[in-house]
Amino acid sequence: MNDLSRLCVHTATTRPLSLDKALDAYAVAGIPGITVWRETLNDHTLEEAARLINASDLTVASLCRGGFFPAPSAVDRQKAIDDNRLAIEQAAAIGAPLVVLVCGAVPGQPLEESRKQIAEGIAACLDDAQAHNVKLAVEPLHPIYAGDRSAINTLAQANALCDALASPFVGVAVDVYHLWWDPDLQSSIQKAGDSGYINAFHISDWLTPTNDLLNDRGLMGEGCIDIRKIRSWVEATGFRGFAEVEIFSTRWWQHNQQDYLEIIKEAYHNHS
Amino acid sequence: MNDLSRLCVHTATTRPLSLDKALDAYAVAGIPGITVWRETLNDHTLEEAARLINASDLTVASLCRGGFFPAPSAVDRQKAIDDNRLAIEQAAAIGAPLVVLVCGAVPGQPLEESRKQIAEGIAACLDDAQAHNVKLAVEPLHPIYAGDRSAINTLAQANALCDALASPFVGVAVDVYHLWWDPDLQSSIQKAGDSGYINAFHISDWLTPTNDLLNDRGLMGEGCIDIRKIRSWVEATGFRGFAEVEIFSTRWWQHNQQDYLEIIKEAYHNHS
Image 1 (cartoon, rainbow over the protein chains, first blue to last red):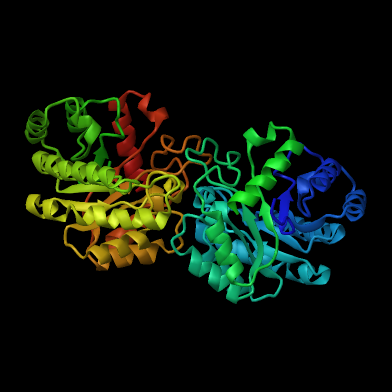
Image 2 (image 1 turned 180 degrees about the vertical axis):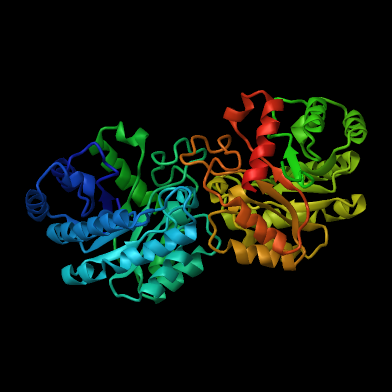
């Protein structure tokens, strides 16, 4: 087994496990990094969650997820901003240096309008990000999600958004699942790296066929993404953060999760 | 009801209808254009199909579809080229001025390799295209299909491919379903128009949620695509061809297809 020092697993990858169980299971498996999904925090008070995480040897890579800024009404947009400010507080409380943003989209609202609202929403959170020393990562989502989950669909777009916001607290999350198809990916990764934007790197695989738009991701090696190549582009920029395993999979959630972590380690070794 | 003179329907939109039934139904509905899917030709000999089409008042916009050029073996790539040459002959036989190309992809084969094979495959068909005076249209497909149906996923890519092939017999098909999410779409359409590449314009709508990756397209107005805006960009380039209704929908295929054509006309009127 190769060096696991850069391996991180998202709690959404092992969705059946509560936070305390996930911390134990990852520790047993020798996995050093964890990205905490907010839904996982619901099983505990925030103080309790922070205590559990601090008591573990795991390093928190990020809190997933903030975002979903666009909305037709100003009231709802403010609610989204408030929720993102809460996410920043939660991140700080559990020692997460980063909040990942799934930026949002509204079915039927023009994408340009959603993009404008996303920029405004993030801008409204920057003081909080700075105050808590928590960075934000714009995660471009696969165009399949442009209808209702994210109007930011390429890394070039995310880079441009970061350029416009011009804050050291805003960068990007590079997720191979969302970006592998992009003919401009290598140059966009280089631009993100040169600009100091790469705050996170997520791995999983694209299955053919994909049977569910949300929860049919593949384990590394099960699909058609050349993860090693994309990782080499990311690391060529100097990025030395975690490779975060983020797999939403109804199929894998049915497995024994401790066994699954061993399978993840093997896949990480062989295909990333 | 507005002017229907630019309305075209794909036989795949009314999949339950055989070619002769489709020709009759479109004529009854007053729809002037038809794009013929090759599977529809299977019900007849090619001569019979040509005779049926000639006897109708319908104008054939294109034959769908050629493509699927990439393959691991040279033998299979040659088979694909031969099949595309056959498609060009079929198009000429039925009076279709255009063959639309779904370019293809091979799960697990690097996209760059598939893109190279696509360019080589199209190049190998150009003499036939010229000999039969049938154009080819590279149709960029939504990135959701990058795994197994097309390694060409943006209009910018399709334009670049046309630039490289540099033949008056190769252009693009602009399909709102595949391209609506692209932040660079307007400029890519303008570039395609300036280069004389726009050979076809396809309309349908993107449903949220989309329940099937292939056969859950929406009728214009059912989803979130601003078809009018995209059409205005296409027509700003001087394009005056058909707006072709291409809807793969298990749901709509269950309707009475003659009634469905009336619904299509209404949707075309109100949302394109």
